[in-house]
Image (tube, rainbow, N blue to C red):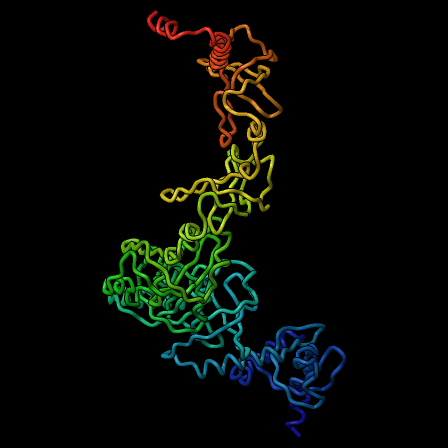
Length: 558
């Protein structure tokens, strides 16, 4: 009976206390101290937004309904269930409780219980929030850690919230775990420095793992340290596309070639391989040797060919064919094709090798000489037109059709008469084997104006024409349409050149006919001699009957 009265008296005393007094008294209980403030209670009722929990001594605390929901939003307790909670404050005269805080505390306690300071204690955490002192973090199990700002190696920014980092546990005390990203980074840097120093010191060939492939090279992991293999350090062939040879994760032999002040590690794959250029020296390859190669890569300006020992030679577009108008190497060769080429340059110092395909092919000019000769009339295609004429392709070579050989009209040019890529008939008028040049004529396929004019004329015939032009060396006379003749200064005779005007009529004798060159020369002096001779002949004819032997002798003696 005494015990009942004591409980009633205790309840009456509690009813008269304010909440602060009750909480203070409750916090001093032995059970509170042993459990870090965790209280065992019983769920009395559940509403839409609150859970009412009996925490003993006629005290009813309140939980937010969200405290007892799982990830899918389902309530994980029911009325009458026991529940562990933590008093976090008060609201409307009732203690505010937290179930989630209890779970966090329990997880921290479990982590601390299993913690061994001799282990590496490297974990991965996600930053949950930030305060003045540093960052609150969680691991995948929901354990809460604190990372002081001085140990974060992060700039003070909210942008890190939600991001995941690897950290090292460096201090554990009652109810809290401190982690450091800075310590882990410092340890990583030291380990990498030790590895790099060892690699550089030994100068050994080591095996690395390709971590990332870029357009400019590859990042290779060597013992936990990343180094760059530039694309120029992959093969002795020269710069190559790393993605066409390797895949991420591949193992490759590498050698350290540079470690600068900025802690950049440069690696080389080709330096870890035998130098194929030594093989060229050993095999005694020389300029002029013929070798079989594989076409590796075709560009606009030529092709790269593989000698089969990690050496590439260069086949310039001008060395692919004797055709000077080649537009693309792919018109003659294909990637992957095996071809014979002649070595035309070996530069061991600069590691350059040039080859030629056309030198193994018969020259087009030699083929031309076997098939054509001077005087042949052939059909060709105009490849280009210039100010001085046109080039015509005939049997693999190009001949020149000069403007003066295009037409009998001296004022005409190839650019006025023909168009590129059209076919024309020409005559081969000259072959220069030494210079490998061919001269062509189109006008010689027809009779020129001179040839037509002189069909009924010969040297010595007397003709008339009009003065067309006067020069220091003579006078040009137009005899017919398109037919001009020249009276040289020394052939003008008694002709008063100074008094002549364009259009004046002149009479002269034909002194020379050059049909091939389409030229006629006249001579007034010759005309005068011919007229004198004609008069003498006429006089001699009239007096021939009276002439005696004595007269002839007398004439000769006089």
